[in-house]
Length: 166
Length: 166
DNA sequence: AACAGTTGGTTGAGTCCTCAACATAACGTA
DNA sequence: TACGTTATGTTGAGGACTCAACCAACTGTT
Image (cartoon, rainbow over all chains, first blue to last red; front, side, top):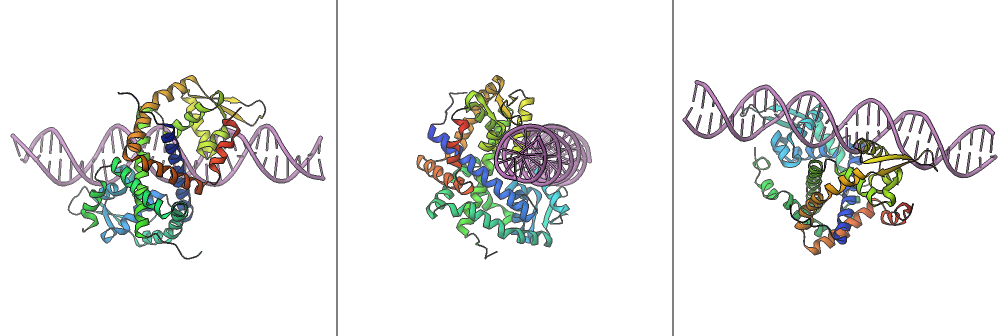
């Protein structure tokens, strides 16, 4: 292990502000969505991804890869969403290991009901605080970070067959 | 409730990238700290705050207000940190309701042991991905968001007596 | 002194997440 | 066909957080 590259005062300040701001933002959005939509943010995003998929249906692993990383997590999430009647599992005929997750009409309705206040919250917390120029900068910065964390992420999403056809 | 101010395509793109990038970043840092330091990020931050306090000691509520919001959360956290031998509770003589949290030598050592790899991770994931100009922009953007979420936060920190004297 | 209201902190139940272990099915090669 | 390897998805235990309820102590008013 080579010498530690400690943060400068300036960097430390940026990092702490970053951590505080994103933490508050996530907590706020989480609480709002839980309160008004009856679901955590992660589950909301599952519904969003499903709602945009062809036939509102995706393989479990595609769903996991697209947004959620861990398969275990998704499995638990879909179990809960299924109990709420918002998602339905279906056996995959071509691959007997596989499972499809299908957004139910009730799930779509729940998403539609939760969306307006969620979007309003995002706007208030994020976009209302920034100038148009800063929004653009933020987009570039976050793209760079995402690329750093997971090279080829963008390309992978674009190339993902499930978002194109089924 | 007035008309929903939906996000434009551009805004939606920025928001999704923001959510994905910060989520990956947090997950990565969390995993690294858990693996190499044996503690979650939130607990690491508790140790950091304590280590910077006079006599490495803070009232529970000051600790909660400074970084963690919920008192319940802090109470659970300190219980766990106390079980690890990293923090010690002490009764407050002037206010018999109150409690002090004191960083133990073992806690300070754990912090020192965890710091280098944590800082390296932050540098790799965040600063290495950005230009100096972007770092500056990020600082301003996050300051604006933090101010939006919690007006007067900066001022409150600066005015907090516990960080000045004891 | 007494009482209502506020503040400091803890507790327990329930929820979500992680991690590791597992079962099942598909694939590749001999 | 048989066997080892890989991929898909589930399960259960344990940890961390939230929320609401709670106790104890301080404060201000009468």
